Length: 165
Image (tube, rainbow, N blue to C red; front, side, top):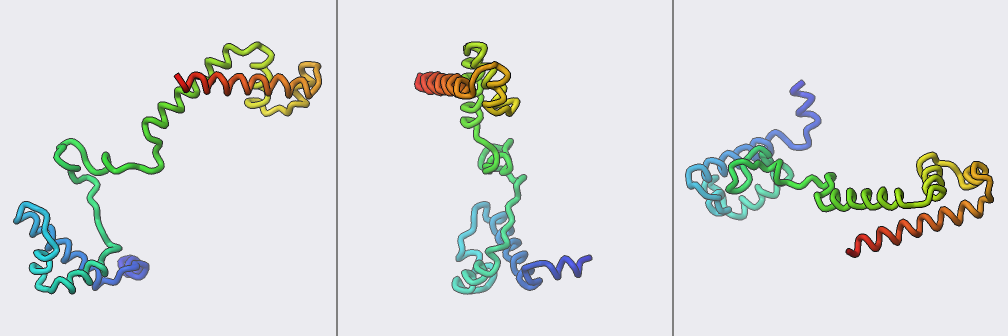
């Protein structure tokens, strides 16, 4: 199994050893010094020149580890996984705005005349076509279209006005 993992690994074993050594040296130096290390100090610890250190950094750049359980800043109760933003997660203001918009739509739908409310429900929730809704109400498709348009425009105006407040 280890052979297969090594075979599919994009990084050579030699490079992994270098990366591990670099990480260990940085960690040990920072532990002893009690502060972040400079590039010159790490190069000195490794016994290489600054140019060689830059080359080493370029070689191991794709391999960088971030310990998500490490403390984030001075706050002892927060770790990095609580601080790093999840791009797929909506932010609080987006959630609040969406909830407010839903509340406004529901509020306005409850104020609509019965026929407009039923037409919107049939069209958007039951996925009926305007011609099918017209047959149900016994009116023309164009009349249903007019009622639908009036309801939607009224809903948009209500939301726009409410959002300006």
